[in-house]
Image 1: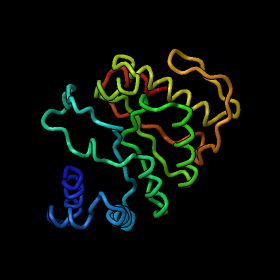
Image 2: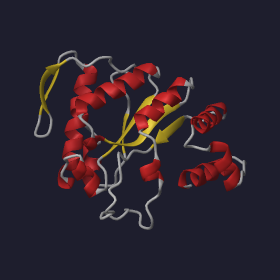
Image 3: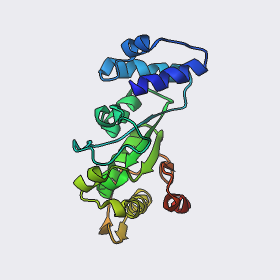
Image 4: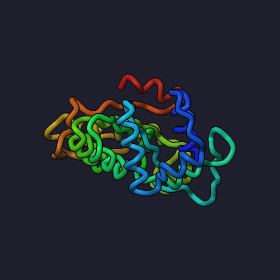
Length: 212
């Protein structure tokens, strides 16, 4: 519902005013046909990009409050796995850029994530936009073996390690949280030197790391 409201608001800004029920019936975002209708409409109308959220899961305890306050939007646990979804989008579009808004990088293994992103960027002819963040849900991170206090440091090392794998044949990385000797990770991304990286955060720590 939250996503439908958002799209509805954006369409109204362009002079199109569908009702909520019309949007819900037309999009049916949980079905394959609904996904196809949405992305076809976006590309036909000249939208630049489509961004998707990520939560691998939401802990049922709900101990960590939702940062903006209020109820947690259902999209946080109902959304598709982002890279699978974006591969589907890339397969049926030609110009639409596809992005993670955001990928919770600390919850992934950097070698596997580097290959997944490079594959998606290659198959989409360089249309992937890599939005990254460290996450706000303490229990979700801990279920992935990441201490909440370490999340930004883990993100930094993961991104730096992935940059090495995207740009070097024999990529190695030695850090506190990521450590591996030279590896070959192919294919390389279509966009050079790698997909653009966008950081989603309000933390002063994150702002200081933008230059990296």
